Image (cartoon, rainbow, N blue to C red; front, side, top):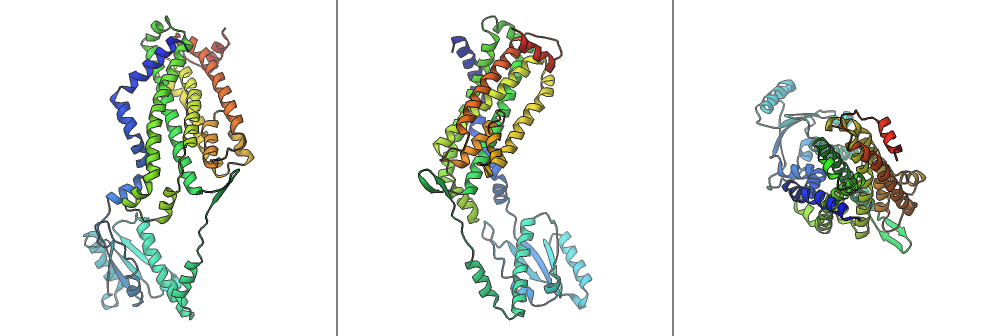
Length: 434
């Protein structure tokens, strides 16, 4: 690599790496991902509602006593999550009693009320009225508690002991301990944990390729519009300029991914006590976090496929930047590139569930899909290598070099072309120039 290209790489890297935006972005990028994937859970814990008071009209006169003692959940401050008050129907006038409760709901004296009809065992319908009906999780908890009471009553009517039956059903629950068969034997591995890790890493790769690719296009357009390129190409060839830009900005992405990788290793190692400390009680979710295996080989493949995918798509972005005269014109050429990235992301989702199928094999050999799809297959198959892995790596390298060559031919002509409206037909002509 010539010293001229190294100079371009150094300029492209350090001119951006020294900015406050890049430094802050690099540090908060993992936090940003945590907020994306765990934001709903965290916000729910921070903005935990106060105790919600419900009045219950029990026309059966037997369900309230059983129902009110089931939901004993507490808030983070130790106070009960629910407070139930039995409401008696005045003079047998249900409508008048409901109107009185509606006034209390509107005046925010209570959160809502429930009406249990006398034929609830047969109808299995309970009226729920509240200030808001958007909290489906809370409604699910109420539905579960009533369902438990009604189920017990139906079983007891048939002369069966509900507690014994429920105990036997619970004792019949089976835990599926999954193991992956490898050349060295079987290793215990969680399918949900593998999928979650692959999903997060693939999302990061997709996001970085799209953001930094667009950065290259804007950089080319800016230098072209300000006529800076004319001075630069007097000392260095257009191809070397394009290559230096791609490698320099790629180095920025790698820097951020290294920081992200180290922080992800930390999260994986200490994730279980962290989520428990935040108040997570779902043992299934805690088990998933506990069984995430973020190994060094997965991270190295992650970096490799990011570099290959970035160089591939950045070559296209650089060619687009050289063709157009303004950023608005460049936006018109971006949708096909973004669609390719998005399709590869969707294909990745389908293949990681069935990484050994013929469709997964052939999809991972499509160069535009390879970075995300093949990485996904490798991540869920670790420590074994899926079929076609080495072939896809060779194909990816070959196609990336070809794309750099094609983009370079467009770049060398387009970078010095001003005022002419860009078109695909014109770009094909530039490729044919010797």
